[in-house]
Every structure is written in structure tokens, then in C-alpha cells.
Length: 110
Image (cartoon, rainbow, N blue to C red; front, side, top):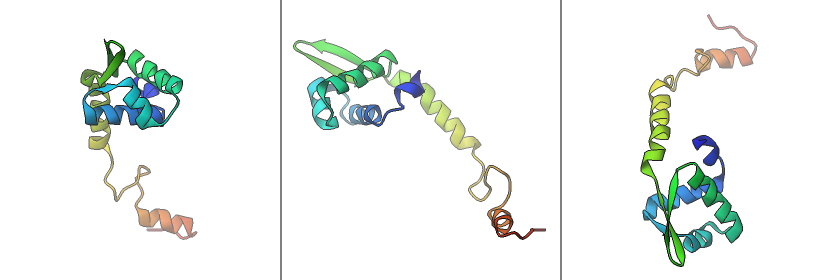
């Protein structure tokens, strides 16, 4: 659910905005994101349903903030990927860039 909630550029922009500001009123988000209020509200609803953000009602507005605990699994996953990535000089195939280039050119490497 976390990946799906973060699969839209507008939702990523909202998360980045909330990370910078710590808390934000809904109308400020609408203004900065530049989408219609109803569209922004739908993105906020999806992020809230995934537990990524919280919305505190402070009449007549709603103040949104990140739920850092919800993002921890994503951070751990990204750290795992980063730590288990092959060296930059070796692609996932295990072949060196030179071997791949010679195959592409029709020559064999020894």
C-alpha cells in the first residue's frame, strides 16, 4: 500500500513539501502543488489512508504532517537495496561493460 500511495508525482511532491515544512495547511498544499483543490484532496486522502500523513482538524482548516513511522519501512527497504547493489563496474548480468560492448559489436571476449 505504501508503494502505491507514493506512485504519483503529486503525492511525492506533497511528501517532500511536508518534509520541508513539518506541518502544512491544506490550502497551502493546493497552492504549492498547483492542482485543483478536489484533485489535491484526493491525493491527500490516499496518503492519509496509507498512514503516510496525518490530518489534524484546526477549524476551519486541516493541518497535515508526515507520519515518520510510516516511512521507516520504505527507508529500510531502500537501504537494503543500496547495500546489496552490485558494484557500479559490474551490471546485474555479472558481465563487465567491456564484455557487453564486445558482444554488442559482434566480437567475443576471452
